[in-house]
Length: 182
Image 1 (cartoon, helix red, strand yellow):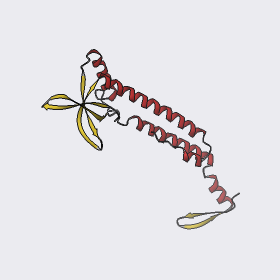
Image 2 (cartoon, helix red, strand yellow):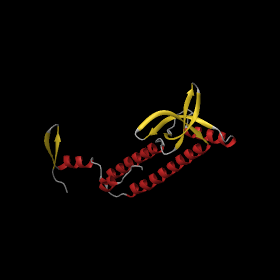
Image 3 (spheres, helix red, strand yellow):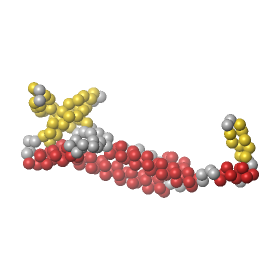
């Protein structure tokens, strides 16, 4: 049991004893309260990380590059390039990533030669440049599947880590729980 406690008050060391000490200690959060608050904060950050991971641009797909041969006319180059497909919500139904993919899929199902000229960042090693790729039925379907799988995996990972946080019994153990996403 604590019988004396020293604390700084405006730069002066003050000794707390008796009722003053009891009052001070009664206002301090318990270890259970601190653990509960820590868990809530960690789960909140975990979900924030999950949401950020779900909207990261996808850069693992290749598509045929398009170039402008005369103003307003784009042609396929036959050159496959990696590109960045933005998956963050835009707030505009016409430019939502899922809307773009669905439109390409629907149009591609009725016209096998259909492709959408997609404006993007083209990735060449360490170099990134503006450009266009041809998004066809196959690419639109692949992008949708990849985004759905990534989001499903992120939710599953989040649920597993959240259970680990809920089951944690001490602040030091809570601090060791990794809340990052691959």
